[in-house]
Length: 342
Image (tube, rainbow, N blue to C red; front, top):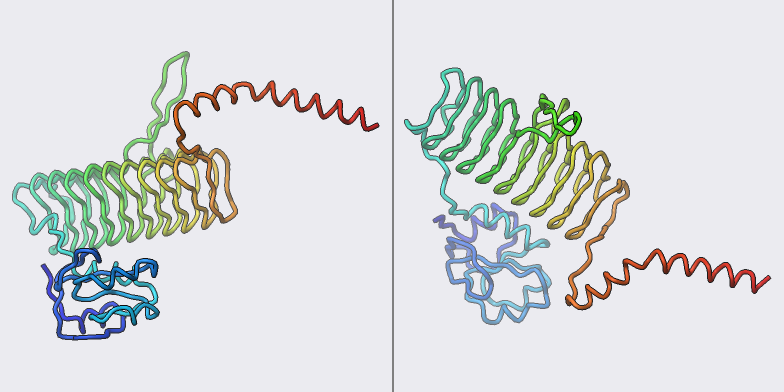
């Protein structure tokens, strides 16, 4: 647990302190049940009444809300961002490895920085390179010639296949697999003939990959995940996909092969994206959207059908099956109306 004075905390996150600079906080908490040793925040003025009852040691607020709270304040134009910075400083998540365990298997040809930590039963294969301050959790597998950049963290049971390149300060959560074979087969009279996947995966700096996510290696060219991309749990990225900087994918999203995604895009839960299409910068898809064609213009797009009562769904589905008949009938009526108007 980290203890810090409010004066130092304000300085380190770039917020204006109003109140007791010597007050010490240790963790973050929700505005409803935070204690005197905790930091909380308010982002929506509609909930300003919660300031009357909170027991938090300090509240991160917009300057416009400052008059509504009499306790210690950290004033910020973006309280949620300031809260994120505070939470990082007070983060008590334990390290995934604190030393190089004698029970880790590290090939003699691998290059492991002196400040790197590798937990028990991790495997570091031939020619791999692990940079300074990396943390490799228990039972991780690092394939041949993998490069892992400075400060990156692999949680237990994550797998990095051969030749994958991981940038600085990346986070790979448990169960994630990076560099598995893409889905490449040639049909031969009812059989499938496997096509070796000879590309790799290039992951740039500050990328986070969620638990049980799979990122396939390229078939010939590489799969590329640009800097700052955030990928949730249970996401699948197929071979030769390119994700632009600071794009974010929520859980269950699937992107088929050779699709190119621009910068700062967001994919809500369970979005399905066709292969060989292009998504431009600042494109946002709402949950369960099915993306079957390119979207090159910035904007918000949707296609998922909201759930309704089963009896209504059955009725609507029955009607949908007759849409061709309805279409033909409308065209007939239009023609008859046109004839009557002549």
